[in-house]
Image 1 (cartoon, rainbow, N blue to C red):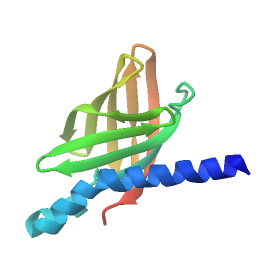
Image 2 (cartoon, one colour):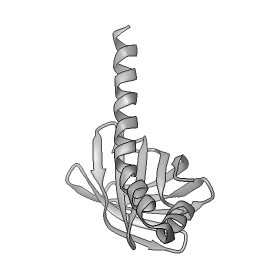
Image 3 (cartoon, helix red, strand yellow):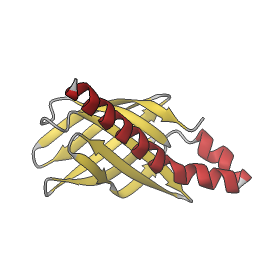
Length: 140
């Protein structure tokens, strides 16, 4: 019974975090009509549920939240261990790349979006891992 309550509380907490992370995009789209159509059509913006094949426990799955502010993107990675902000976010065509610091080490991430799926890899001193995900929160 306690585990069920705790799981529900965690799910509610994650849902609230997602809404808070996506709210800047919603605010921007409500204030500028020219920007709103491009934000809604953006292939990256939203929440992506992902899995990392072979990753250490606590990093095997999570939620990737991507928002766009002006011409730049912000990335937030939510794992079982907490929330990590992405640095050096770059977009080229249908590929987004960024770095995250995990337990003191830099992890470079490169992902390609195609429709409602995202695939790519993460590379660190520990090796490379395959990432697969699907869009679970969309601004459409």
